[in-house]
Length: 118
Image (cartoon, rainbow, N blue to C red; front, top):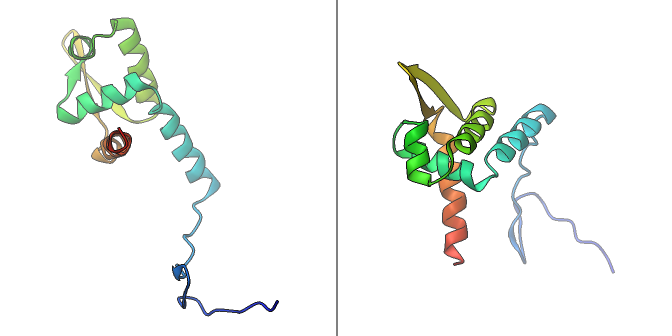
């Protein structure tokens, strides 16, 4: 059996050959892994979805998600450490918001993907 060489971009049985995607640096890949781990808990996903709509303080998240305040605070600490959320003190409360919209797209796309199969 002889091997057939094909030029890049040449069409074969599986379609055109796509150029390789450049591999990000090890640091970028590690950072992406940390970010995805921070988003991995269902409560943290729910928090991101809530903050996608509007900034909220802890008691609003407690009410919306029906989760105990200490647990919400713990999850917010993880999200804050990962750079997903930012907290700003306003009087006696801290109001949380997403750092940017890219993160909410990751969560929304993941939830939509799972719901497609349901």
